[in-house]
Image (cartoon, rainbow, N blue to C red; front, side, top):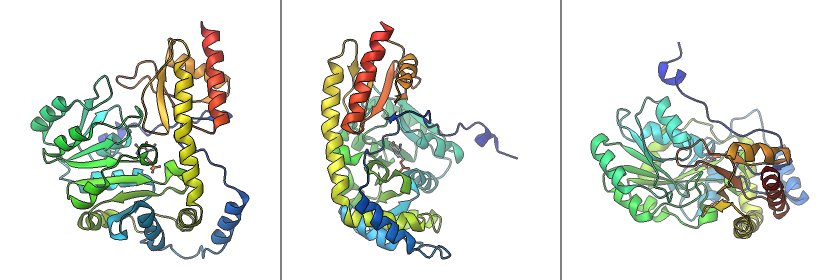
Length: 351
Ligand code: PMP
């Protein structure tokens, strides 16, 4: 029998409507040159598929540690950072202690907590999308949660929360997870604290830097903490192809990733500026590779009309505090221009 806890759970939703311009999943716009494809063919064709991969993904971990400025002993790899969120939800504190996080945020924190029967403690963000410190402190006093998740920058709002507020919450003996999936676009990090404290870890991922299909998430912590969390890791969670392809990309083609990340940061500024010139359109500040915007029209209608123009964004208006909002990821300049044009057309049609 399926437990009541699981029956009551809603599965993670993704936006799958087919469209020519897909700006809905916060992926990196990057086309791999022939030279990259050739190298990948070479390394993939030499994989002995009848064998299990290295359970520790040693070589991949080494290059990741080098690229992220840490030691391999500080790293636990997951099948995406989703899996690491699950490992943390299993490992930190007793299961009868709750999990706290602001809302709206990345849904996996709540899904993992519910799957384990842990209490979910959801604290609405302030109107400016920063943490409501007073509310956090008061609910922590009442419920004493063991673990807090902070998406930093926050998905879907795009901003980084105040560092001081995060530190103040942590002082209440709440183990703090800084989910820095979008770090490459914010440049803001708690890495030093994750390496020096036993109550802080940082999550990163290769998904937002061009390698989402490989499913490689990265947990960075003090060696003692990393060692404990590694005990719940499934033995061969990083597949052979993922290990070899990610290694080649980080070792030989990292410059390509960096170039495309810079392009997205430039595009973020350009497109947000262009959008804010449109009448009735409001944009919200972003430290990520996506941002929120709203128009004078209902978000579900704008979403539907944009789909007719072959542009896919995410309607997030059903989330608390996000009435009228849509989330758009930054793509190639021509994709972003197509989005701008489509939105202008849609707004004209609706007025
Ligand atoms: N954390 C946040 C804040 C995210 O937005 C996402 C992806 N949407 C993830 C984690 C999961 O990333 P991964 O692909 O590494 O599982």
